Image (tube, rainbow, N blue to C red; front, side, top):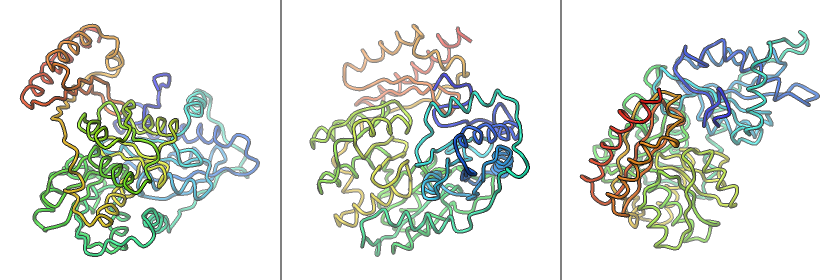
Length: 454
């Protein structure tokens, strides 16, 4: 994605009021996207716009709406909805595109804008390039009688609740399960509790009262400790924690132990394999725990790694005609259930495996032993971040670290696609050793090659 000046690995994201995250830019972006997306349309094209719960969503929703209207595109407003719900509604309402106003797991001071195409998948690079080019053109308005209109879809939440419920096997019920559900004060705060309750579970909702400022604050999948503790305090069967826009999920077993995305992938893949419904193998990323790869090898499931980012996992799944993939962060793709990662749908797939097996989540996760893994996020500016792969000092430091691991473990050094950091990951069998090695490598990033290039 480096050929784009605005779009990153997951749309456009940053601090509100800075760079591209301004009302002025959102207005122009809405217009540029509207001009591109309406090309060849004999009638008014339409787009759906949804957002998470951060306070700046109101600002960007209005600016985008005005830009699309100026380009002659109708706007269907969904309000606060999970990112995958916007993908689903785009497809179900035959819209030209879906627009998500969200910074996902970032704090409320950040926001972002990302697009889905008409079938609910990430926007094609070629289309993004055309939108980028249109941003350089002077903004014009269609004739007054051709201006776009806007209307709010009042039943959007109910529609997505029904869709989610339909992703489990017909007749599946969650009666008898007691669930803690952490909504991160984000986009799942209405949808998720309703889905689980309507399927029969007893739901203990937490962090489900957003105020525009508390999204992801010490809660949700980025801070799952409170959810894990609540499971223990309430004697729940398991816990579920979403991120701010609802495309990620982490879980906890009845003992309050965290179940991350790698373990969720293992549970889902083994359950599908047992009923001959896996279809091929599983796609992880370079950050997926080596224990996951070992576990899959032990039960004969093929496993491949992609670059970090759900779009790259998706690309590998499509290329191989597989269905299941994801990341340790909890971004899980079940392509026979949804076109993009959905935390609610992924959690339902796990719950169905629990119900079908009659076993607790803790038992289903057995069989995968996680290697100790340390990830350190080192702040680095944007220009230097792009030099990671070319920096000789860092390459030598990585080689030294790999040699010290003695062939048992992995080292990954990569720039984040969503934050101004370089992620340093060291994995191995000895916790103390990998902690020391990760700190040494992080210090090289802080003081070494990248700083010399600033």
